[in-house]
Amino acid sequence: MALPYDVRELIPHTGAARVVEEVLERSGDGIVCAGRIPARHALVRANRAPAFVALELAAQAAGVLLALSSLERGSKPPVGYLVSARDVKLERAEIEADVPLVASVRSVGGAGALALYEVSVAAAGEVGLTGTIGVFRADGPQESTGGGR
Amino acid sequence: VAILDLVAAALLEALGPEWRLREIPSLRWRAAVVPGAELHVRLEPPEGEGRVRFTVEEAGRLVSSGTLVAARLGA
Image 1 (cartoon, rainbow over the protein chains, first blue to last red):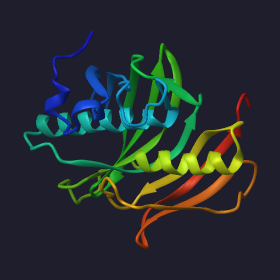
Image 2 (image 1 turned 135 degrees about the vertical axis):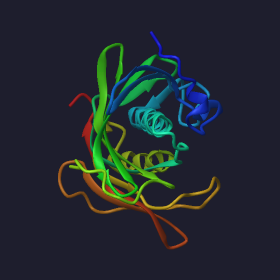
Image 3 (image 1 turned 45 degrees about the horizontal axis):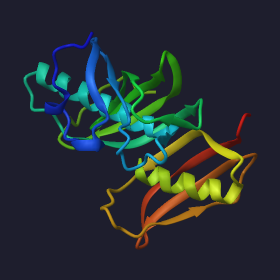
Image 4 (image 1 turned 135 degrees about the horizontal axis):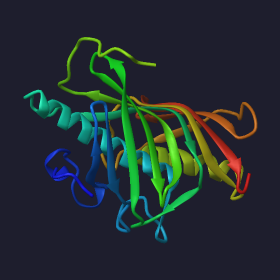
């Protein structure tokens, strides 16, 4: 069951570019979000998207986590930019459009304005993508957040 | 992620239709790109089975770089 957060108010993406739909779980350092790649997404062809498009869902879920963490501290949500991906494994070539996906994101530290997240994206309980992404907070803190890999 | 689509298409065009993208060992998006920008993808010669370094430039400015690993479909 979804938690009562409106992701439209937490990340700037709109229309077919917004692939995260709702928050399923929230913990101190992580989040689980539901989403899907809409058929009218720019990278969908013949109702299928390359599997790496799931990185976009993971990045948007990380953006939701970043926004919620900031709001919980009483701060304005920062603007986050996906700047890196590392050790990403793709278990399939493509994912179907409009199929429910679940993105799990866990903060693993960072430095300065760079936040690192371990991510996985699954469809029907089967993990299709795992890896680590880096998100740059445009108005983020300048001190170390510690715990980076 | 749209830049990655461009690089993956170039990689799979070079290797052939029986290949797919399997791993992204490292990738950096170094600069924002506006829609309609003319991008140039450079693939280095493969370092091993399906492992390729790449750069993406816009007017001589590096906007993305990294390493991709492709695998044969079904492998």
